[in-house]
Image 1 (cartoon, rainbow, N blue to C red):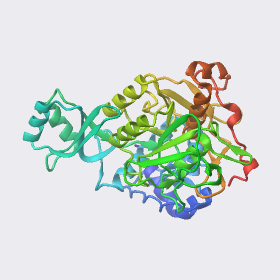
Image 2 (cartoon, one colour):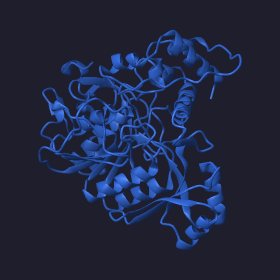
Image 3 (cartoon, rainbow, N blue to C red):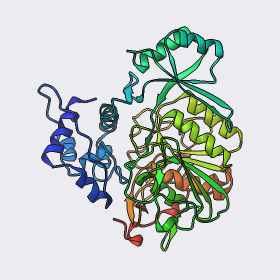
Image 4 (spheres, rainbow, N blue to C red):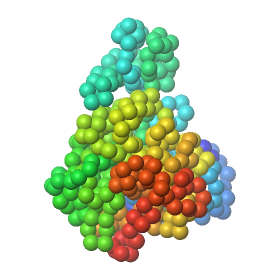
Length: 443
């Protein structure tokens, strides 16, 4: 992490008066208070003109606490100025998530957020689990998923240890156990702050089923009469801007606005409960289990994070049952580490393009890339009413997922793909699905 970026973000926040109001102007709705930027120690070098100009903009806080239009005016410009700048901002964003949630979140030793003091074990061997308990581990949760036929035991590490130290000890005393951190996953662009809007409820009937793992979905005229069922895996589901936007791109319909699979039944698994400090691997596994019981043909995951044994195994099971998983590649630039679940084998990895068919410069680089879809210069629903401009791979993935549902197979979807500019995988799909923000009065 470049120390001068910390310094410049602090200066930008102070001098430009960045506040919750800045985010509210961008979204047209209320947002959570901004993250307090850290105070750097010592005399720091002055940032170069590119970053100084970018971070001095009134919207600079959104690079750290993203809104629906996660890269508008800030990260987009930073992406154009170089991949290392995006990596620095990614590091700062993750460290701020850890710093502001120290009671429940800690660093895994590589700068990634994980649940504090927790290690998760997949299908534990009884003898190995007993050795772990004798070594001072305590069972924090014992979860059996009948839909996935998985058994997950979360153990609290011995007192005084970090999750990193606890995982190391566990692998020493019971090396046969399949253990991992309970990593946290982020939305690939957008706000997870709970919104002052009612939760969308099941009202109508639909045809083919599609699922999404995200934040909760708010009521909106474009979702009225739709078959929407929600379930929470980090507490009761809470309406969020990110989840609402993704849902509208899947099944929404109002006037000039329409999603890409408007006649479908939508199942929403909220793994955040309105908190950025949620979205854990174990919550995602539970969400996949619930969705599996609903028999969707496609599941959209507009979230990103590191590889995780539990998530990988659950996705493998889902895929073995013929369910397609579509995931966003993230918005931290091509120099960032490959993001998951998009990088898992068989998962359909989706990047984003603008109105001219050009790959977004801030789009991430997965281990493989399947398709691109519109992810900029477009509108999506706001919680309650109205529309906003959105940008990011989060909003390309649901268009690709919906189109995959309609097409019926990845092979048929590939036959629809059209050439684009830059890194777009097999091509751009659902190109006509972009809704011009002007046509719906998007803010």
